[in-house]
Length: 388
Image 1 (cartoon, rainbow, N blue to C red):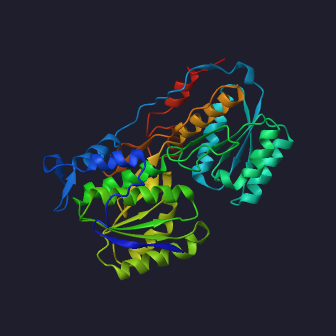
Image 2 (cartoon, rainbow, N blue to C red):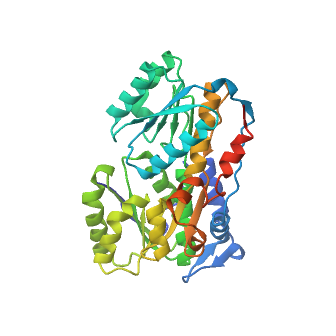
């Protein structure tokens, strides 16, 4: 396990290494007294925090900047979809929607399971190359873990695209990749922080549980830390890390240990919602039903837990239907010889007790974008972009 030190209050000045987007957020958060709003606690909440939460609480609009293009010549082609792990429900949802999106223009999808390790993921890519794939989409693994396979695909003239790995708003396109898409990891961390600052009235003691061997988790964690530091001088933050392979064994004990060491903790933030399978029992066993859990992803079982009211109280969800259609568009552009777009990310939405009751918490709705822009919104949007 890895850990970061506890940060009491404002740990230091805003560092010069903040990205342009982070700096803009920091400046927006440095409001005057007239630009603050009272929250649930005794402190003041920057108006920028209140506004950011409000802007991401309602349904989203299906939009896209890419121009229309002709895909008719791609009918009958084949895309290999390489998933980091077929048993991951998050990635499985992307795969189902990606297959549906590409089928709408006559492109077939062959799935290959990376089985959770780089060796098998690379073997999938090499197999796709050997079988003459027209393009390869890799979801989950970081591009650095299959750099040699990228070189082989480039030599064979097969475009490879990355998804659901690094945050494309903060990470440049790796050599050999034809395009990339992702969820906005940094934004989800920022939104989780903002929800807590608003909910606590600017007086929260937070335990953040990260997965240090997953780049997206680290991006989310850093954004969360920076946002808390920028907007909540009366908040305290402890960060602990548990590697992906050790979730089942170590997340529960780590949570229990931190709650014993610091009984003042009021919020627990597992970076991804599947982690709550291990953290929530530890919270309840510690007799801390008063704690508020905030997490990220929006998988169906955990939104159902949120709807029950305990202990998950808020979640930043990611529209996986939209993400799949965005991936499909990038793939089709690469296959058609069109330029792919940069910074293509899935829309997100905050769910809490105020809006979770509006959702149909069933499997079909979890896949079709109903909770975000509406069922079929992205299928309709791209039907007008992909000319056949």
